[in-house]
Length: 487
Image (tube, rainbow, N blue to C red; front, side):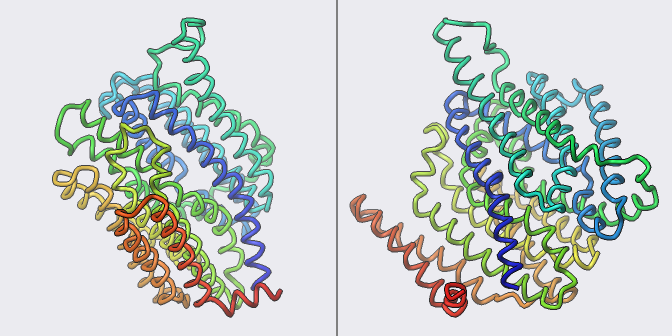
């Protein structure tokens, strides 16, 4: 089992190169965005990306995970999945373009027609690239996967810097007014992303050329769709949990449209800080999902999944504790005018921790083909998200959205654990997992109570807090750690 875990760790590291490093580099654009744009303009960006997430899941309709499930059983699964997703997504995007003005009015963004057009193109390119990326993962071509992802990030960052720093700088200094148009504004963000996604699609052409029309099977599509559509519902529920808060804030907050966009912008910028913890989660998911399916038939599979969960919680808890203790440094990534909302960051960090735990726990319904039961969990979480936001936003503003997110993910993890015990028992080390999670909270709360001390002493205490966490992990895991070091 150790060799298999080492393989997963190695692939997670490679995927992490493209996901963690890439998104971290992309995150460095946040200071540029929050400095160049007002809170209201950044609110428009946050809101449009929230809508795009819904459309992405809808167009992919669970076919990525269905492909992982069927790829070993049917050689025609890749071609069938790619053709079906491509046909449906292109048709729907064309329809949405024909209704562009109505869509802009519906989402209260009549002044952002260019941004809406660009976000539709961006979604189409990303959907068409999803299955070729999945093919790279099943073929264990993690290095090529990382290269394409990093190219996308490099282009996105480079183009944003060109438009919003270099070209805008020339425009502001009256040296060259041909490269930058102030009327385009935040649409430059979407222009940069759309160009990068199109180039990404071109780099994935070798994978797309593996698609053969003669291998498209309608009967196989029906099997895959039966497996996938509950996952689509689950994905939509997940997007509700992750992004609907920004949309609901637009309708439930008091004030003018401009004032609501300001609040959404502050919330969206502070949410970016909590994304640090989700970087590892995303890299882990890229490697773990095909790994779970590949090892499901092995005798010690459940034990392996339990071990993975334990290591996962240790690493995520450590990352969470670092961000909590040194949050003042992470807050520097967003402009001062957004800092009034940084109090939501600890809440969102713990919410993301439980989301990662839920991803691990969800293995049971994917491996037992009980995706409809998994969809019920996700839909229940989505309903809880809507109700909690509806109740809390009028009283607590965007803090209510952060609390609703935490409530949702804790509840989903708990329900997934209880259902998994019945349908696919995995011996998760529950006591150890809870110990690691609550220890981060206790260390954090203990140290922030000494903020009256000098800055040097506070930082020394924070380092001591990290050391205490390492000591706790070693005390609990010393047998396994000694075995790893011995080998």
